[in-house]
Length: 267
Image (cartoon, rainbow, N blue to C red; front, side, top):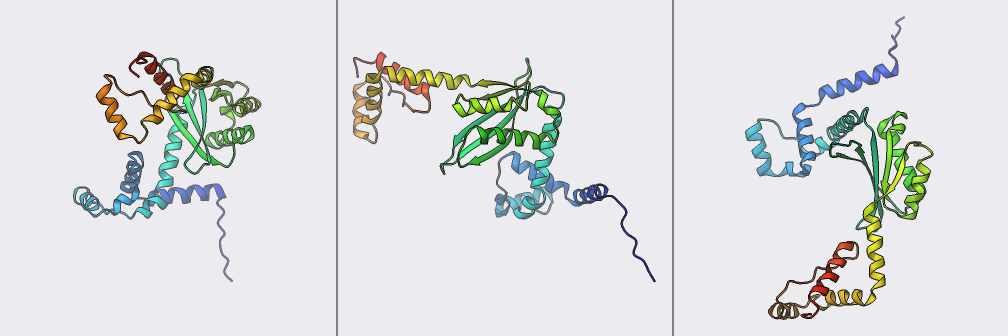
C-alpha cells in the first residue's frame, strides 16, 4: 500500500514560491517595454503597426509581443512596481493629501486623490493614488474614498500620524468631509483651496456689477459665428479682441472687464 506525501509548506511560503517563479518566467525585455509604453503614453495597440513592429524587430532583435500579452501578464507587474517605489519614497516623510472633484463628459462625478511630500525646501512631487467615478458626491462618499484608498495604499495604520494637511475646494460637503477625516487622522488640518476663495470673490464682483457683466456677455455673443463682424472689427479697431470670458475661469471675466474699461470709447 502506497501513501501520498502531503505538502507541509504553509500557505505563505507556497504563495511566495509561486510568485517568485511566475516573475522569473516573465521576460525582462517585455517588462521594460510595458513600462516604457505606459510611461510615455504610447497605446499598446501601436505594437500591431507593421512599420513600428518591423523597426523594433530590426534594431532590438527581439520578438515583439501581441498587445494582449503585455496587458495580461506585464501591466499589473509594472503597476505594483511603481506603487512599491512610491511607498519607499514616502517612508519616513511627512505628507499631505489633495482631493479634487469634477464631472466628466458622461456627466458622472470623478474624484482624484493625490499624495505629496511635505518639505520646506524641495518642490513637492505629486503622486496620483486613486481616480474614481461616482454617481453622486457628498461628504460620506468623499470621506470613504479618501480613507479606503489611503488604507489600501499604505497597507498599515502607521501612516495616519504622518498626514498633516488635507487640501480641497471649499464646497460644503468637502468641509464636512474634512471634519469626518479628523476622527481617523488626528494630526490632519483641512485647508480649503485659496483659488476657490478667489473664484468666489470674482463671482461676487460679477454679481455687484450686472451692467458690466451684460456688456461682457454681449461682446462675446456679438462676434460668435460672425466672420463678417470679426472682419469689420479688425478693420476699424486698432486693438486686439476682448479676452473670451469663461465662466469656470474667473480670471478671464476680469480680463474682459478691464479690456472694455481701457477701450471703452473705441467700443
